[in-house]
Length: 375
Image (cartoon, rainbow, N blue to C red; front, side, top):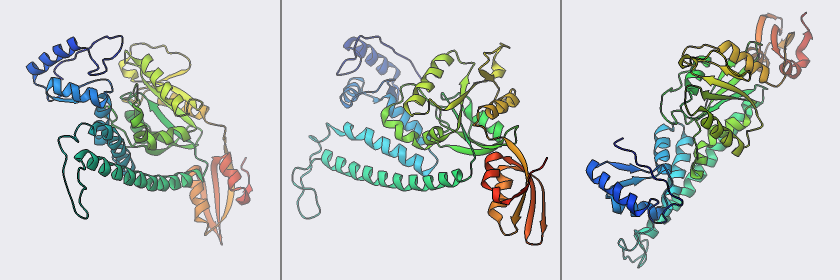
């Protein structure tokens, strides 16, 4: 970054966003510094962007385009890539205006452009076709993901989603809690695609922990679809871990921005555990009673965090029971191993005898196989 320029105005200039005087000043700075690109922390209309590029004689990028470029470099799953491409195409369409006059091409004959069709019209038609194709592919991928989610939900296993402002340390905390190797980087949107891992709580209940994308202020509406995969994990979660970078001087504002996004997507009523991260960078030793201080880097406070998750989850107490399964009933045996803690297992004739600690909901699900409750 070569320089930062700011301006306070009562209202934005319709032609260039900034006023004529500030534009002249910025033009002089641009010629002196010769930057590769000038970035505006504001959405620009197509007209404003064209006028600024002409005046500054360099490439101009607005807030939305910058975020789209970052998203494009972070998306790893097929759906994430498709959603970002769709947002890019929808962003690009209105910015084709102004090219048609100078790029008119005459054509004739079957299969060619008709007389007078402009390059603008051709580009629009091509982009609209691609938009329709991408939307169709997204629906196919979403259908597959819904099937996967239904399979997960077939067994009552709660999901706990990590949410927070970008760069709050969610992925570092997620990795230490689960032993995963999700990219943890001090970059915006380092995690775009959701990652899910199982975690065992102090009560022996197993939950699915979901790492999600970091939120930001004033998220452009064209980018909402690019968040769709991870936002669905947030909306479906039983508990949200609201991760806050407690060392940030802007922690209060960032917390407010996250709450606004949660309200917009309909997840504000979900139970939340407020987690102040980066405890290793704080000097204070006392914290509000409704906050769990932790360090994703060192693991400090993790016992209290797991206990807080246990307390926040809907009631599903752990019970001990004896199950007698058919030896061929691999699905039920797998459920006991996956969702509970198997204490003993043996085979007798055509039956499998299992002593296990399981959530009450699992015991109810397998009640036909319960032959003796352990004391």
